[in-house]
Picture 1 (cartoon, each protein chain N blue to C red):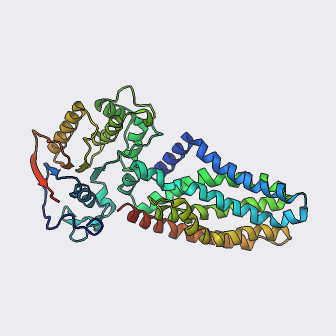
Picture 2 (cartoon, one colour; picture 1 turned 180 degrees about the vertical axis):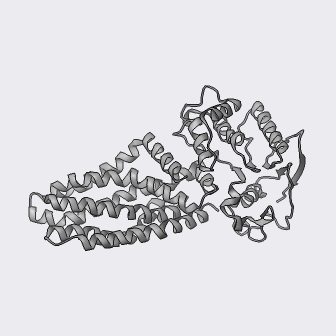
Length: 196
Length: 219
């Protein structure tokens, strides 16, 4: 429910390890709302979300240790450098990343040479890459990615695809809201289409 | 965890020093306007000093509270903070602690200096310092609730003042009361104890209320 409008109802699915869900649907169909419900930011009007058999409401903070959510806004601080952004974001999620690992992750995201530059000098796509670098160092099982491919170039989209493939091979689960088709060579791909 | 939040916010504040300094200058200027406007009537200045300094501290904290969560809200980092595997209570305590160090502590440190303009004795300046040291955490703590409630609203700054300033009244009464007691030669200790008790109660309840408000604001 958003405002007075019911976005979707009768939605019932369960996912097992190594599953990739491509969430599609026209603008305003509730993709973001669904992802925010799944990560626990938004409470569903009815129904519940279970993680490993337990309701995420009762799991509380323990659930967040298993989830990485990347939303519309990259969550990158303008005043901090890419390196600081990455290390602090991970430290806050309880994962200490060494300087070398963080640099390697940024390098892989194509940010070599820009690691210590304040993020306000980076382009929109580069900021997005800084946010995505978190996927390389986090150890969570469930990834919820909301339109993370916007303002990324072709090379970066390919990079995201391979990141998700690696994640699925590690028995992870990824739910991605996107308008672009993602053909993955690993895991099980499911499509969930929301209509208005 | 708490350490990382405080460190992050301090670093962000350091990179935007102008924000920090503007609050401090506001406090110094507001307090200094009174002796300039009233003239050298020492008796009058001494009697209004506690109220003036404390009210200026309240207003100065209004200036910085709007930024407490708003910046993080705009760039999406607040969402990420809500999804950290730690109690949100701790996140809020960390942010409030950082806010106190950034916005209130400089003001506490400079207060004895600006107090000199009011012809306060050395002992009274010392009481002024202690009362602000004990009292300003209350401003940050209660203010965090207002900042969380008005997150994402237009004209949130004015709304914060309307919501929060009335809640500051106990802090103002006991804080200024302690200084006043010292001016007329009584012991300020009882006022300071009550101020400290109020600070502890705010520490228990304000972060909890602010967490609940943050969850609602981000839905």
